[in-house]
Amino acid sequence: MLKHRGTIRLESHRLILRRFSLDDADEMFNNWANDSEVTKYLTWDPHGKVEATKEIISMWIKQYKDKRAYNWAIQLKGTGELIGSIGVVDLSDRDSRCEIGYCISKAHWNRGITTEALKRVMDFLFFDVGLNRIQAKHDILNPGSGKVMEKSGMKYEGTFREYFLRKDGSFGDMKMYAALKEEMHV
Image (tube, rainbow, N blue to C red; front, side, top):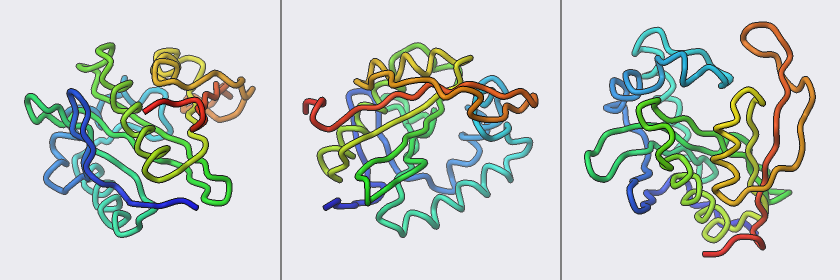
């Protein structure tokens, strides 16, 4: 039986993971949502205007009423800067599993920050919510995301061939990683 708690504030060594507020729109837009390099391998296009960012944050805020909604803003403890997002993009209560997606501003790539955020969220979802399996997948053209998954304790499970349609119209392969609760240590 899962114990859904919703998007509650979480902390790690360098990060605060918290709910988004409308006040975050400018920072989210400027730090990652309008960056075509950050969104290159994601399912959504860069935001052309801050209004698009405000719309998505408004949607997330409405979803926070649901204890099954998990979507965190990633904030640096030292500076308070908002640098990314991480959340559950697919959840199955019946199967006790979820899929996680994340993105982070380019200025903070290759610093272990995304791995730190993913590990903290995985611990919460495994040991507080009670999920059995957490998975994530990435375009094979984005191996850096796979490294984040591996460093977070996930294992490579396979490649889905021509799994999705890329923004350029080509079909892309997707690598799947997952971790099981029994494999994780608090």
